[in-house]
Each structure stands twice: as C-alpha cells, then as structure tokens.
Image 1 (tube, one colour):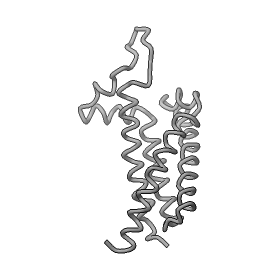
Image 2 (cartoon, one colour):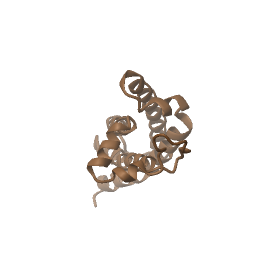
Image 3 (cartoon, one colour):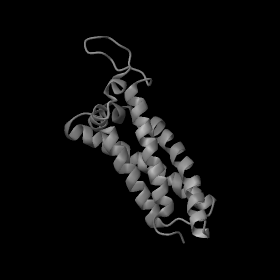
Length: 159
C-alpha cells in the first residue's frame, strides 16, 4: 500500500464514523416533527419539507466532516468533502421521499418487510420506530454514508 492509499484508507476510517454519528443526530434530533411528518407527502409540500430536512442534515454532516478533517489533519480536499456531501444529500433526499424507497423494497422482494409494523388501514395501530420501513431507511442511509466517506477520502487526491 502506498502512502496515498494508506492516507485515503485512514481518511475513510475517520470520516465514516463521523458521518454515522452526525446522521443519527441530524435524523433524530435536528429534523423537526413537521419535516418528519411531511417529507413523504406528494407534491411541493412533501418536496419542501424533505428539502429542508436534507439541508439541515447536510449542514450537520458537513460540520462533522470538517471537524474530523481539522482534528486529525486528514489529507482531504474541499472537492472531496463537497462531493461526499452531494452523495449523502442526494441519496438521503431520494430515500426520505418514502415512495422511492418503498418501490425499491417492492422491486427487491422486501415489500412485506418494508410494511412490517406499519399502522394497518382502518385500524388504530400505534406507529413506532420498530417498523420495517424505518430499518430499511436507516440501512439505505448507512450504505450511502459509506459511499460518501469513500468519495470524501478519494476525490481530489489528498493534499
């Protein structure tokens, strides 16, 4: 492994947990109840709520990457950080519109799991965080945060 390969691997290893921590904070503490309840609605109301959520989410994840960049003197570039944040933001928006992730679950044979724990039509079921939709949503985000960390570490070739 060359010095640059090792530097990229270390950058990836530091950026990924920073993104995962920031993701959890942004999705569960920073996101407003209104954004969470409306981001999956059809039309402009849903797109606007989702866009506001992704904007604050991206601010939190960007701050986390900038913090570890500075704290650990990582050989990142502005281009790499920006590219990683674009990957994170676009994929987060795509999944959080909900119909897109639900369709992907159906296509991949996970539709029943996606619906697991969801309130049943005509029933007074209690919605909870323990749904298949939530698990698939979080898994999707973690997948792409791994991609974002790799892009952040590799794009721009370090300094």
